[in-house]
Length: 87
Image (tube, rainbow, N blue to C red):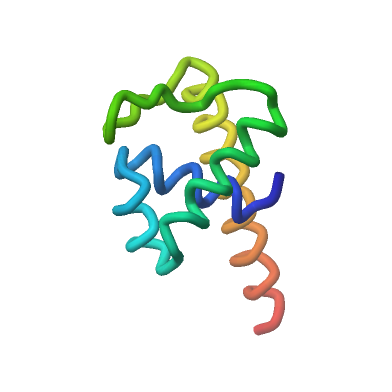
């Protein structure tokens, strides 16, 4: 699991659409699908229920989303803090 996986996961959760997440992140839809499958394989859990073209976040996905928000927020704070030291 990488930061990029978490960013992709967040985008999919926020848009509830892999194609829209791909457009938002300027990457291909198959790359989005692959990253989500890699996360699901890594944790051994389904993060989304898929019904036709619609997706729904599972309970496990909701838990991961909260962690993903915390991790990405901490990284943003780290980046801002380190950049402020350059001044």
